[in-house]
Length: 186
Image (cartoon, rainbow, N blue to C red; front, side, top):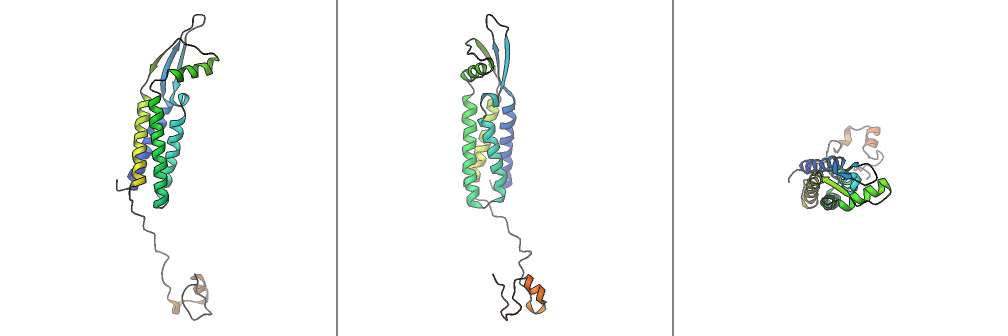
């Protein structure tokens, strides 16, 4: 991609998808025990695993800051954001079979481990993985793309006309009025 703002937009869309998907219920579980009433539990992506949301927040910060840093640091940020995107994809896809995660969550909420659990899986993890793909592609583009550096303004970089300056104005420009050399004292 040629524009840094496009890369940032794509990355932030990916971050938004991951953060939105992590708040949705990924798994609905029904626990039926013989001596207790049926429990209907719902687990969001953050309850199953908080890593995708954390990686998305970190990548979001990296992409926002990437617009204000130079090329070398931008490449480092791109590599870190690529790793965050790969982490989101890996964790989101490992929760597509969440039986062990459900058992751990039920054990945490009930205090005991139960085997008889039926669960229905929603496809929010796939949306989270797609957001991770967008983040990874944007990180790859940021790490290995060449973006033109912004032009620095030269509004205040004028050569002073020494003959028209007063003593105070020459001091403002960094020129020693007692010297005959008119170069600034950098």
